[in-house]
Amino acid sequence: DIQMTQSPSSLSASVGDRVTITCQASQDIGNYLNWYQQKPGKAPKLLIYDASSLETGVPSRFSGSGSGTDFTFTISSLQPEDIATYYCQQYDNLPPYTFGQGTKLAIK
Amino acid sequence: EVQLVESGGGLVQPGGSLRLSCAASGFTFSTYAMSWVRQAPRMGLEWVSAISGSGVSTYSADSVKGRFTISRDNSKNTLYLHMDSLRAEDTAVYYCAKGWGSVSYSVNYWGQGTLVTVSS
Image (cartoon, rainbow over all chains, first blue to last red; front, top):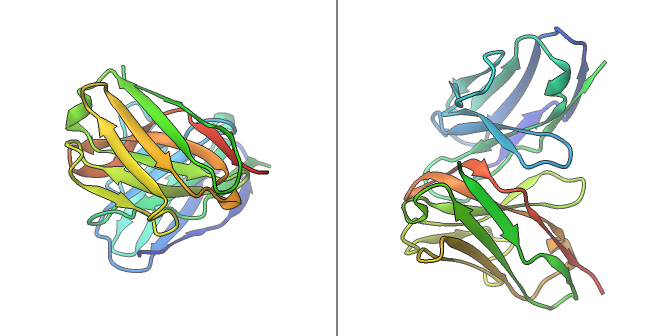
């Protein structure tokens, strides 16, 4: 199975900061990568698909990049409502579709 | 509007069985692959199982293979997860999730989840 290594596991930033999370796949997955946001007690929500495509209705301060094995998720200007845990997930070929370990984002 | 409503969770003893259901509405259910994803308390997300829109193709994680069975009834717009030989480590919130197409298993929408607790 493909392993996804996400970092950091947690981070603290100030409102207005640029925030970056990385995800590394154990093998080439092309651009078959999602980024999800999960707020406490809620279901995950898709933000980015195909590594860099913004899901409908998602604010443009969220973006994704990368291909192959190395991917980046960025919040250009952190807002208080962005406090959540973020997960990457690969969907190369057929399941199993593995998740990264998650990044818990807090406000400094 | 897409809606996915899970039910069937609860407390079950180790070795027991449980069947989860997910009632879908707001889209043509039979034309979308569906999945189950779980989240143990204070832990990350774990993909569990997926099924094609027709129900012909199914996939399961190694951790549940041989114990859990995913199925669907397209006439009732309902997804199921039958869980046998339950273990303490199966304790989690189980989410039903919708794919992008009939054989496109990547998830773009999630239900609110149902809690399964395996304990004596």
